[in-house]
Image 1 (cartoon, rainbow, N blue to C red):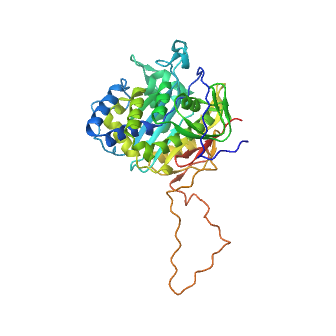
Image 2: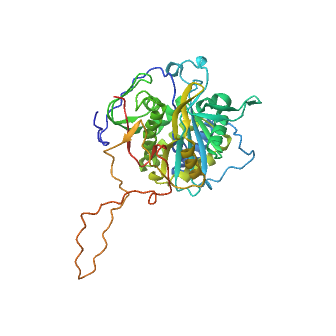
Image 3: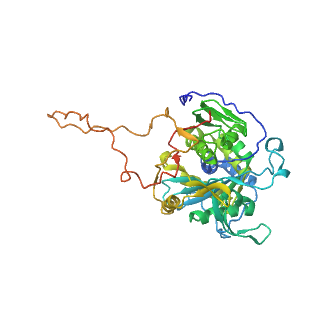
Length: 433
């Protein structure tokens, strides 16, 4: 096994371009909403007015969700009141994409949501959780409205990635609402070009690779070390499944979380948040390459959600994978929901309990042994010794740190089947070589 390279060293990424056969588009909601906020806050008023108009004019016609109420006014540009549930969907559709890179859109047989992620922001804006739903998980799909009227029949068990083909973004939202018990008023869909342009607009994302990645399916080849990925290389990294961990979609999710956590750290860095040109580019790229729900298509709404997220500490931004086990239904292989651990997770989200992960990061990632120390944590100061007394000798037999227990852990300690990490955790992709 190759030793991971220290994070301050940067090697050039080698990603060979070829036709993409399957998709796993992904993004980070914070990248989208924080950018719009920063354009308004950092730019002068005239520039901000033009930026808002230009971004708004780029937004595609919105999708109306089943739970939206027509005529509700948009919030003021201030942190949104209360909590937020926002669903981000990555589509594998070739429509409107470069046929030379992504294949002929006329040959696609179905449009699948290969990435489905739910962002939950707590009522008091002290924490945020992003839950990834495995694409091959069997779930009940409710009756979904057709675009031309009528409804698709409800189904007791289908893979969650088929919901986009049955009833579009609105159907995916209805399915996740039924699965989690949460109301989801905001949603966005992103395609291939969106991931490419967004990763380029942010200036690239540093990812750590513990062992070399070699994936002939996505033409992704990366040596061990730290790579700055943007554009096509970022998309292919997010798509790779055969190149990481055990080659499963679950491994791909944990590999994506390596990218997402690093992206959140990049967005919260002062260099990104004080660069108006870069921030405008991010917002423009997002608006030009996303299909939004009606509730999210208003600039004020995007800004207010961003303001709710901007001060959340990194260790309170949790990336979690919906807990599953391997199984099959009627001879079709996939993964099945683990209902007990899942109920614990979403009950905690519904009541805004702080979350603590106890499981592993996932089969596609490992903790970075060369991660920088937490610079925000102040060292403990010794108690002052009264004048005229001698300090007691140090007890070298006692442990230097207390063991972590459920009683001392913050909030709800999730079952070990809920894998993931926080944005404050430095991790590396676990390659297949």
